[in-house]
Image (cartoon, rainbow, N blue to C red; front, side, top):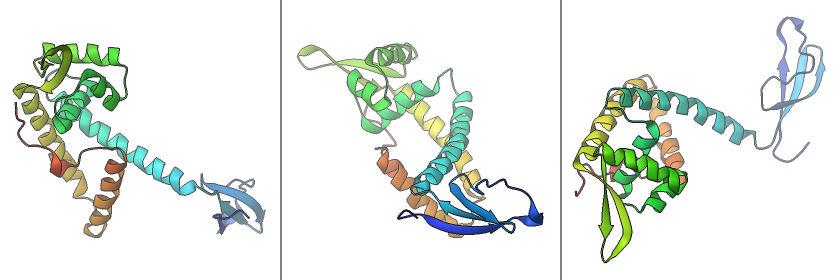
Length: 196
């Protein structure tokens, strides 16, 4: 057995035929005998299980995000994400915003054109170099961020009320570690009013 593998034996109720199938997506079947299935856990399955858990939670959070945006003006999730980056990190060059969003600079240009048209962001020339452009939130963009964040907070709090009190501290730690690994600005460090 390889290092880091875990061994388990599971009884099969009622003598049901498993055909040697693993009992869990992360298990490898070693053998079946007398209605029992001997399995070993694949090394690295903890990462797969964690990934599945995050994907499941992300579906819930995307639903919350979509509902919070549906109540506002016509704005897409990628456009909103650009506002979030500008709100959390301050004015950005288009190339830096594109990198933060993980999209092509040409795509960010079109995305920002729409946000400028909606008066949610502005383009400012920097210093003496007229080619140097910074994108920043407008007061209207900051207000939209605040409204959507408040809507999300209310819905997320409603969901979290169903989490047993003893489990909440673990969730705080897990989400803080996940957000840090992704390079996200912690909520407590977000400005509540932008210097516009």
